[in-house]
Length: 409
Image 1 (cartoon, helix red, strand yellow):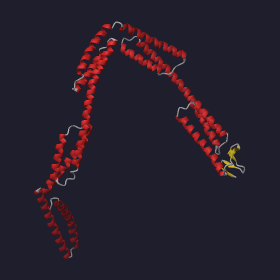
Image 2: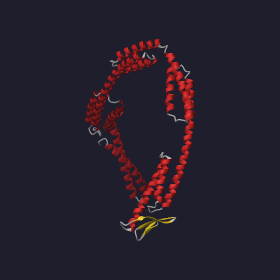
Image 3: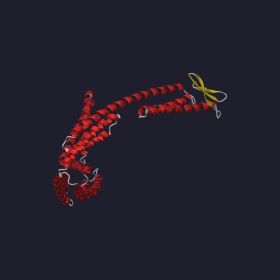
Image 4: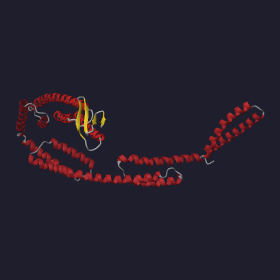
């Protein structure tokens, strides 16, 4: 017989689980050892633990409906109550009970939320109706018409109310739209003369647009096309049959121009990208001159590189600072080398360095002689004091000698 804190297997292969109500039969196991039997039903318990954990996360983090959640809880509770697993089944029941409370709370919250949404939808639709009834008296035909169409889209996006309330509000909303539409139609019935004027205006705009379509003055012409478009919109609509034809001609002329401009810009971009590649290669060639070992040769090489650089055209604006910065860095390195060479070969500086070195050497030699004399006379205190002074003078001498070496001394 084998057992653990939550179950056991008797001599006949029957598996039991321990519960608060006493032992319950889990099943029978004849295929292997009692330990394997317990392990099998413990894995079934772990499976239930995993399923409950997943359901808990779904309830907390998703929009799982209360109905579906309750069905899943009932399904899991049935599996727990059938005692086909070995483990703390009561702990699973407690978790399922807690889930039921959570689902019930969520159900009430959603019910309250639906009621709130319905109330908000009612107020929103009442506001839409009020605005539509105000717009019905407007003479801003285009703006009011567009706004009414926007109100319809807003209405469609709102939840439905109860049938009676929804129908009443929609009737008022629809009546306001109809009233506006009738007034607008009556108004536009008298606009034939204005439409004829719009047609003549747009024919002039089309003629200019077509004349500009072959222009290569890209900036000025693009700005003019924008002006023409603004005038087009301000001219009003011509008769329907003329409007479509004029628009197609107007837009077609623009398309010819902008397609040509795009082609030129694309070619220019490709050329600048190739220029960038060439300048990057020259920058890499220049960078090989640093550190400078032969200043004269490096200067000549850099002049050659710079001449080739100047012969190359523009590069993309956003890439210019980086590639030019690389060349400037090499140029600065050459300038620093020139300055160092000048300092190294400057006769006046060399003479000053040699004079200072000589003075310091004489002072060091003198101090050494004084120290020897002091020790010979038995005056060790004076000798020690002079020795400290010698250390300082020797350090200055070493530094001066190092500087003199930079002049090739």
